[in-house]
Image 1 (cartoon, helix red, strand yellow):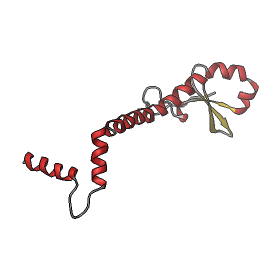
Image 2: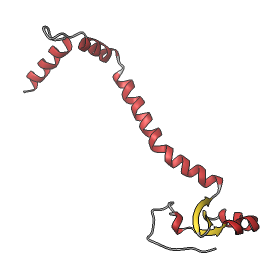
Image 3: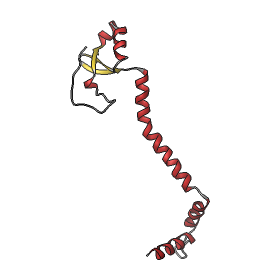
Image 4: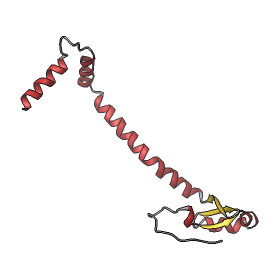
Length: 121
């Protein structure tokens, strides 16, 4: 089992190259010892001197999965809030008015917007 060191990583992040490694043969022959080591820190599993797999605890795997999903869940919640704000009765009425507009006669929503802009100047 060996360990290489490179540049420091952000807290909680470990590159495969920075992990202690165990050969697949050692994993097979000394499984309980490898599992004990993996319970403390992720281990790289090597075959033919190449790091091909990582063994880590189920708890750490769940943490990684949650950290991957957290930004998406946050964006989804933000999106749902924006949609809810846009789906009020006045907004629905304004959208309907917009789509009923013609090139000849501006929609009431467009006329209102022009008035607001004229007063703002």
